Length: 129
Image (cartoon, rainbow, N blue to C red; front, side, top):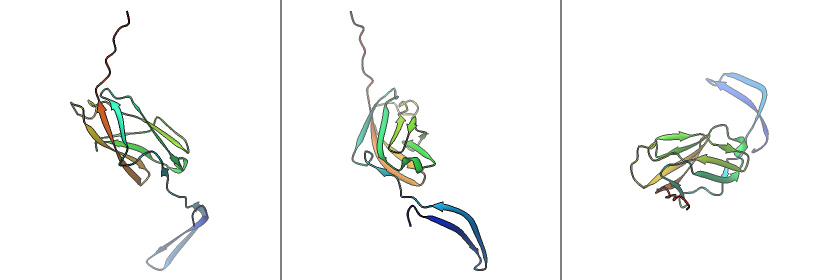
């Protein structure tokens, strides 16, 4: 049934039937190769780090978002059929005040998967002499 055109048929109260001549196609769920509960992403406290996700069937997804700590939802910076790129928010945007690990969830329509992100201290940059 996947990737086949199907007619839409609606039945109300076992009597009324509506058949639409337009077709829809059932497609397989997206496949994520680089995003799972055992992999831990890293970002600086100031944010701005890119999270790159590799997989398949991303071009069929209508709503792509990443959720940070059940608080902030971010749209992708870029996506195509095999890659999605998100940018991490700062710890201040998440109302955090110290280095810690948080839960992140990718939402691809109604297909969700969770991983983790650890915030580390920003690097020190010294002026060259």
